[in-house]
Length: 170
Image 1 (spheres, rainbow, N blue to C red):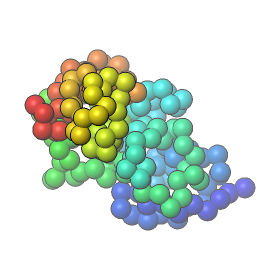
Image 2 (cartoon, rainbow, N blue to C red; image 1 turned 120 degrees about the vertical axis):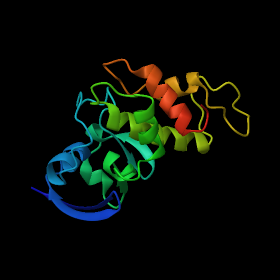
Image 3 (tube, rainbow, N blue to C red; image 1 turned 90 degrees about the vertical axis):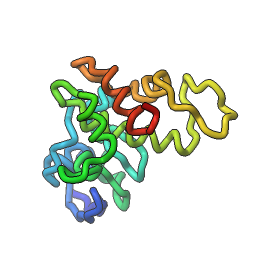
């Protein structure tokens, strides 16, 4: 049995016929050839597969592709190009925010979603003042908000520095 799904990925519309059990991660990698999104744990615990769905960060391994019909998906390939890097991509390069690089696409997509959450005024567990009109992006805020993305190489100080720079807080 297959289902028809129409979704927009990195600005391009795709109509696909897939098994209804296909995850968004497998659709991206196996059906659309977008291998920048990585399969880490395949259980939603590491964040390597983080993409943006309608601007909100999601673990692609935990979302069925069929549930993403008529949604706007952005992967690492859709954030920037080699000629025009996204500010987060440029900051990750500048601050050496990666070592092996496996988690980097998920880290960058998660950071983009996290910065959007901050702009919308969404608090975290360490937000100091929930009534403040603008939430301060501190190192602790970045660490808390990015805690769902694991870097086995432990490049966390560089990742935090890159995010703070991209957010204009360096």
